[in-house]
Amino acid sequence: MGKKLLVILAVLAALISGLLIASKVGMPRPAKQTETVLRVVAAENFWGSIASQIGGARVSVLSVVSDPNADPHEYESNTDTAIALANADYVIVNGAGYDGWAKKLLAANPSRSRKVLDVASLLGKKSGDNPHFWYSPEYVNETAAQIEKDLTALDPAGQSYYAARYQEFENSAAVYQNKIASIKQQFAGTKVASTEDIFSYLANAAGLDLISPPAFMQAVAEGNDPPTQSVAEFQNQLKSKEPAVLVYNQQTITPLTSDMKKMALQEGIPIIGVTEIVQPSNMPFQDWMNAEVTELQNALSAKAGGK
Image (tube, rainbow, N blue to C red; front, side, top):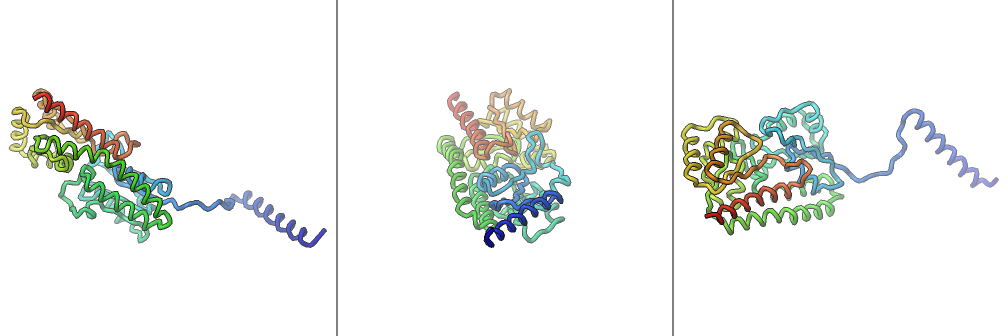
């Protein structure tokens, strides 16, 4: 037997022996090297959906608040959430007081390697400002662009991949955003009402005149009782049939907002139901938005045709 053959056999024997020993002591066999998978945690599923679409196979996204039956303002964190945030490579929080629980958990588990996107800070907003940024097409586009930049910074090898998927998201989001532009062209200046300020950014983008008392909308959004004067003013607006539609947040229902909804129905004012988080949770963000914007557009068209 030649020397070369003996050497080859010896090497094979050593490899087989090593694999047998590894299997006996529970050691993992050498695995094929895979691409980077970034651990991403989004405080809410609207930002999580966008991150997932841009990140694709190179990210693993956990959206903390995604229960359609819960009020996001009242979310209470738990141990699992704290662990997920502590181990995350990238965290997206809405900010402006909307998800203060996330800020507390991040502060309790500091990490130099973890990147955090505070959407409010990105947009130049602060606590006390209307935190429903995802209802603004402009803010959505700005946030999506930042997510793509952040993922690229964390995973430079995926630059072209993230860029391509970001462009796909922008093209898809243009469907509902163009529809908002169409509403503005057709119905600019039309009076509308809302039970809280979740609709303010969208109303502004669509050129609609949101006439509901600001004090009423802000108080409901913050879980407080609106000033008596604002309640009376809102009721008079509905009784006078001033707004063409009433936008109703289905996740922050109170006896007072239910009364406003009932009054609007009695006066023949169409009701547009909206939510604070993506529903169903597996629906892409832009499809969710498109469904709500389409409902708004149809209601305005029907109201205009009925005049």
